[in-house]
Length: 258
Ligand code: COA
Image (cartoon, rainbow, N blue to C red; front, side, top):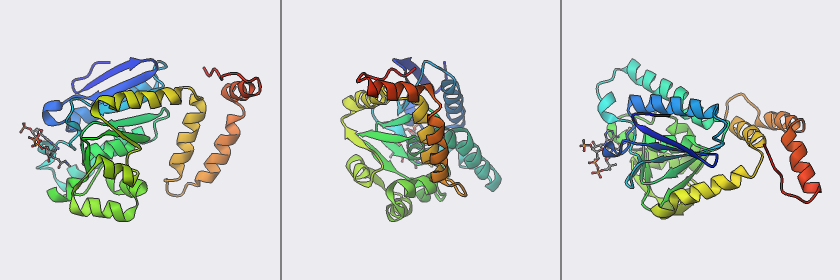
């Protein structure tokens, strides 16, 4: 897979997607948004990739936001379209991705950058990371899911404060808030994400996909996540992975999932 603004490498069933516009602090322009969609669409069907790690190029930024230079003269309709298309093609697409997606936050994660990290299934950060939703300082509101996913992850009061002050929090505070799961040095960031991906790879990817869908249904209007859980739990019993996992346990051996 070759892209203008992304680098995608697959090794040991782990796909590493790097947003690669370091001179612009990896800001998400239109082209990068579309490339992210294309990259994830391709990874969805690529059997060599079971887990995805998403990070930014360089040591300064994960993503410093949507590209401000592109939307500064947008109309009301264009603004709506930007948010709607972006949410559908990238942010919701990643949130509902059937394979685990881990964000390795390697510096600034601001605006669309934090929204991108929040759309992944969980986050780890380097100790130089700074996270925030600065949109209100620009006279807009977060448009890539930030007003919904930030309160889900950190609680309403903290989210309100971050959105209203447009301030940044450091990695330690982000960990305190539950916004990132682990903090480490910049050198250890990818090894940590890879180690977590490796642990995931020991388990049934069929069961993991099913669990992602059930967890996500907790956050969907008009959908009862408990019903999804019952349905998906039942479906698990018909899978080869269930037979392999339970047989391996009963025979005191390590499961070997396809
Ligand atoms: N959109 C477009 N360009 C951006 C950008 C963004 N969101 N964030 C950074 N850049 C560009 C800068 O314009 C600059 O480009 P230039 O060298 O051609 O002038 C380059 O990236 C480096 O950024 P710079 O501001 O010089 O780095 P800094 O270390 O002084 O500051 C930040 C870093 C992150 C604090 C600062 O870049 C910033 O505030 N960015 C915008 C963050 C934001 O509001 N994001 C939400 C958008 S909705």
